Image (cartoon, rainbow, N blue to C red; front, top):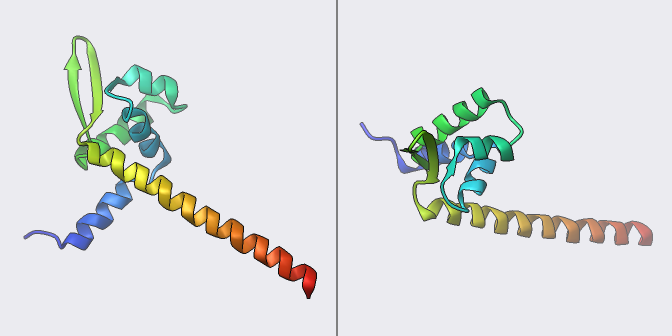
Length: 112
């Protein structure tokens, strides 16, 4: 029995709900990277990174392959990078709206 689309989308967004996973995806936008480079760029224990990479693999957001002795990780599709870009745009719009609201609240506080 397949899950409804809205449940699949919710699971996708739950996968994105961890800062280490987001950082991994951001780093992989630059191209495939070995685990050692990800560890260098992200201040986490190797076991934690391994766990987060496994979650991203199970969700189909990253792929892994061997390059000699290195295990390389890559985004599974350019759409993952597009999703991160959309998140940045949404966050920018939300924060801009909050700044405008905060300015409005400050201005109205001086008047009344």
